[in-house]
Image 1 (tube, rainbow, N blue to C red):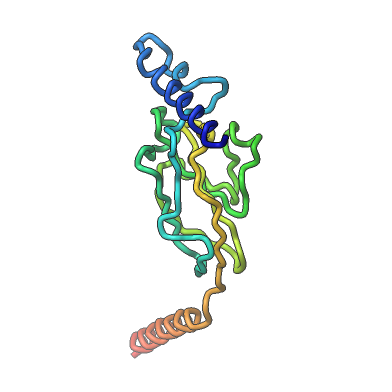
Image 2 (image 1 turned 90 degrees about the vertical axis):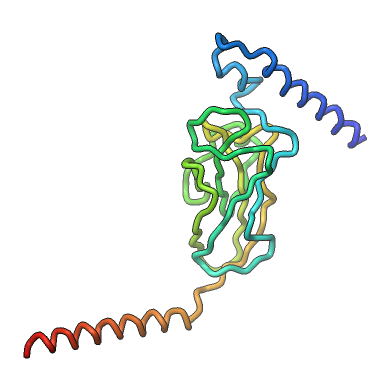
Length: 189
């Protein structure tokens, strides 16, 4: 039953993808191709985003690097670039999009981080503890694609920065103070 539904869906999606492409005349306003029943942009079947350097259950030390991956049938472009099958990444931290948010522009706050310049990696600073991360691709108007192009939700554990790292920093600070003192001392002679 499930397989049947999926097959029907694929055919419908293909028809939807082929339809507008063959009927493209320069005279048609560009919005007409992307607009179906809503303001969502269509994504190619099977498109997804993923975390290149993190997997579910990883332990990281804050700040940590997050590298965004995207399946080869989609491209990354800055927001405002209206092209089929390109979008920009949004990193959801300790949040997931509710079904009613899937056809709305993604919120902008510290839990919905936008990469509107088309960035493919970022540094994330999070308090120690468990956090969930998810990538959702947004189109040129920050609206998730249909079907959504997103990663699985992964949980990472953020470790507190180790004491060792702190002491090195302090030592370096002391050393530069010493140097300054010596320098100033030298000056007085």
